[in-house]
Image (cartoon, rainbow, N blue to C red; front, top):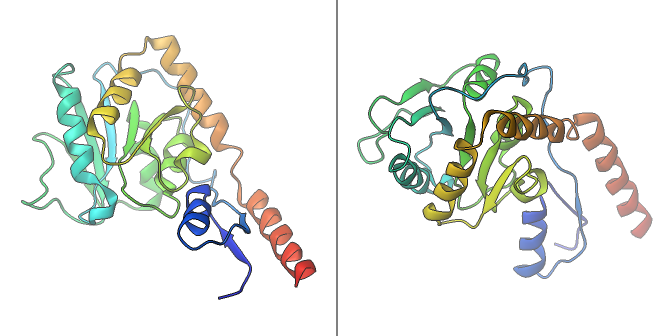
Length: 221
């Protein structure tokens, strides 16, 4: 319809332009509640640890994520996986043995899950935004994610994490390994960079952008 569009990620803006031919879409990103998602400065784990949000929905790409984790484990045999989700793992999409899985954890416990990880993995095939990326970063956890939703907007390449194309478990495994094999001081710098970047995404800032987009739409009406 001929209405003014507002999108929460550059990825959606690209879809609006390339698929629907609408090149006039304003970006108003989601934010993270920094009173709920936070973590103290910490050191890299002695046992390399990857975090993952588990879902049976195909677009979440958990099958690709698990394939990437298997590849990482070839060089990191003592790799640990911490996962959470609103669905229990199924026989059709099983988690590796000895995965620490949290079923439907309350919001206030998620920060401890994010903060237990050296890197958080998001392998989605499609996303509107992908809030766990920002939540993990707010908890000082670098993120490796596919180029959907907010990933390219939020993650600073090789600084606070990495972004790769969807459906590429080899690229995901490579970037995960890069983060997991950083020395302690380099990992802490990436952890702090992730946290600092997350602080730029607040609901106050998003509200200002939303108001600006509405006023711009009214002026053009």
